[in-house]
Amino acid sequence: MKGSAIFLMMLSALVVAAQDAPPLTQVPEGTLLAVELSKTLDARKLKAGEVITARTTQDMLSQGKIVVPRDTRITGHIIESQGRAKGQKGEATSSISIAFDELEMKGKPVPFHASIQAIAKPIKINAATGLPGSASNDETAVGYGGGTINGGDYGRTPGMVPPPPPVSPSSTDNPPASNDAIDVKAQGVIGIKGLALNSGDQGSVISSTTENVKLENGTQLVLKGK
Image (cartoon, rainbow, N blue to C red; front, top):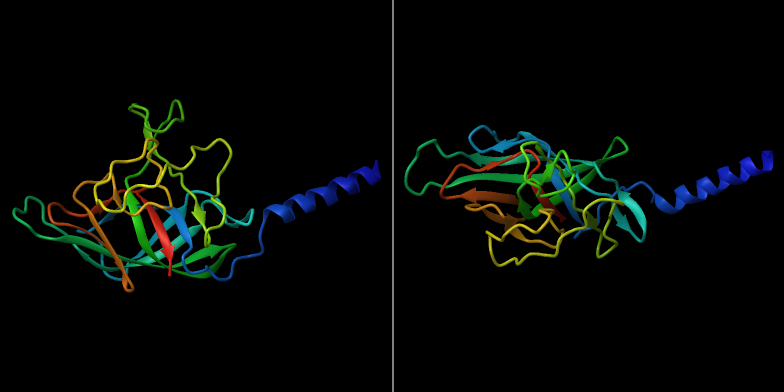
């Protein structure tokens, strides 16, 4: 009996070792993460320097090991924000400029300078059925997605909706995928009319010439490490 217990403990340790990678200390350039915003960002209310947060929506794997767990906290800041007044007529640009700075691994900050590669509306989940895209008065925003490190494995959790196919990067008003989950290969603005996305070395700018920029809590982003 005692020998069996020791064997089971050793086997459990081997399984954990096979699943978990060593602690991440640096995020390679080109790493892609699917995340969702932790709170609403309103261009009228934001101020330069304000801290923003997002969380990964799926385990990210590299060579079969988890390197960035689901629900990892990512922080960034507002570079600049320009709101559009209510009822304002004519063309007047509203914009939010964002830079991402680091992610938190086991309570420790890890540098993660990233630009926004794609943006999509929050996923709507029917609270009664748990299925995405279902018509219901009890819908809640829930994130899916995943990530890759330099072409590594795409993280998936059993029972969750698989990622959608990539969308065309040539349009800023691509229709949403069938299950509304953003793919890390996506580019541009997906399923949100009137927004434009431009990313550069200094940060990413989400803008609109027709309305005030407001990104709801749960808005999906694909972040690309620099």
